[in-house]
Length: 265
Image 1 (cartoon, rainbow, N blue to C red):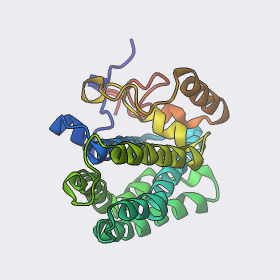
Image 2: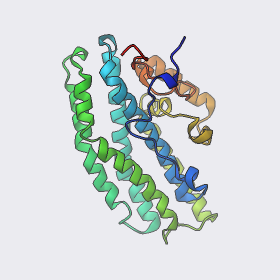
Image 3: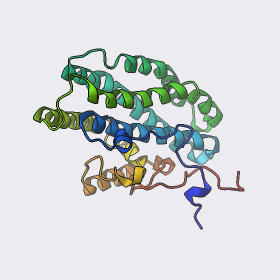
């Protein structure tokens, strides 16, 4: 009999998932929606982090090469996400609201976790062979940026949601708001796709729980079902590491592959 999720840790620790502003406020406007969409991306990154953190101590020698690939894909996801914010989301939002002070703290927070993230990457890419991989060493590195990463991901969602009351925000229901929402969604969706159709985008989807918050995000992002199925199945052909992800190809929660069940630790 398969081990149930209840019998194994899932990917909601050590980084606790972030509630979306839409779920908490029941409001739907430009920045509440935008912050919630950002929140869902951050939660996928959190599930990725947690799945690495929880499985790293238990990786068998035969799985080390694939696990390293999984870790490096998470790194690429987080780095390109942060870089896209710096060059796209932040300046475009500041331009819309005519206020260049909005993301001052967010820029500082990026700087707070990027050195540790770089060390994470450098450790994995400097291994002479997969057999040298050490789960304890990786956890040691992750501990250096876990707190600033957690703080940033939460505060950024709150910062964006708070822009709903900014004096420069387009009036709710106006043509300007609808145009800004469409531009925001298109730009951020394109950034995610351009980050990597065969690695970053599948990583996002394989760590996206479609049942989160009662399933209200099951149809987000608006990728046609056949396209999503193709992306995820092609990714499984190209890369062997999706078995470490927190969700299956239907974006349903599943037990973590490498974590032993009760009595087997």
